[in-house]
Amino acid sequence: MVTIKEASEKTGISYNRLRCLCLEKKIVYITAGCRYLINFEKLVEYLNNGDPRQ
Image 1 (cartoon, rainbow, N blue to C red):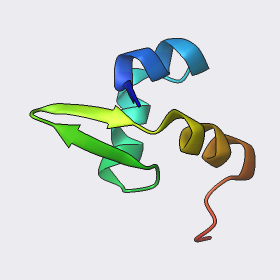
Image 2 (cartoon, helix red, strand yellow):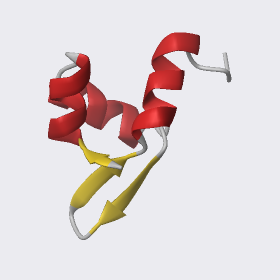
Image 3 (cartoon, rainbow, N blue to C red):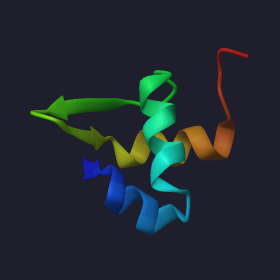
């Protein structure tokens, strides 16, 4: 689990875009207080395979 900021630094995707993906429930995340923690392995899978719901 990584923060949005860490995921942004690792992938090169903007902080705002990752936050939007969380709010749209397209990537796996949990909230800890007011922080979003992204499952990095699932994020990489999403980036490689795209959205399976489409």
